[in-house]
Length: 351
Image 1: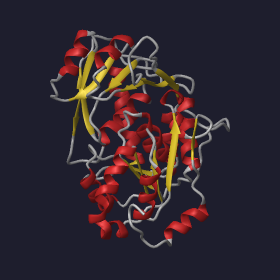
Image 2: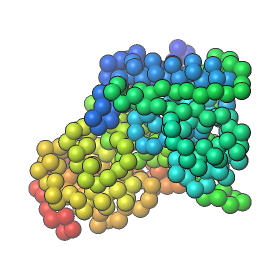
Image 3: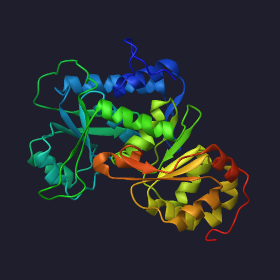
């Protein structure tokens, strides 16, 4: 794994890291989705280059703030990467009840929304004088391939890419109020956080992550998406989570691990008994949980069902705490424990 720049230092700029992976493993799959053709690292960089050109032509460049409010899926992942590689990305939940408040405080220059989705978000955006860019997926092509259209009142921006110390992300606060503050994350912060997750989980390019948490959340963005891309591994970006559909994705995509929130794990646990044979055909190396407390009962049940260790991460979003030390905590993935579960016999789910 090579991550060094020309001066011998580790690359800490998200786009530069992805370019290095595209040079190292160009035909390796980067982004995948159920029922779609995968996107390689070479094609991912091509898409990011196209997006940089499009944003620059619309007057959006380094340090400008662009919000992205799209539904879960590979287009969301590539759009977030493209914006962060060009400007400052502000990921937003498309159904966030506090969207209007966030738009009033975060100095957004443009916002990417789904094509044709004339909902309350459009009204909020126009009320704040923010330019709308509409994203149209192209479903018969590679996962993450889309068209981006829109108009702005700005002159073309300088073709200058962000530096390590520029803001890659601004994460809106989860709550509103006088003390609620957005989280500002530089490229260096973001890359080091993702590297930390990849190291803790011993990820390499043979891994394939099924990320059930959308990347408009820090859990899904850093641990689900970026940690894998840091090492040239694959990420499966499915649409909205449904417990029954998870087991279809498990067999179709054959991930080596998945990451999810506690409520998702509970739903998977409850539906698992009817998919026992499918689970046996699709072994996992480990399971990761974050974004809340996973109860010991659910953790033990998942380990027995999948015969794989559960890595439970804790922390605060404000400190990117779900990523592990030093901003939070998670149990480790030890080789002896992994081997023990690989040879264990199935047990009752709630034993």
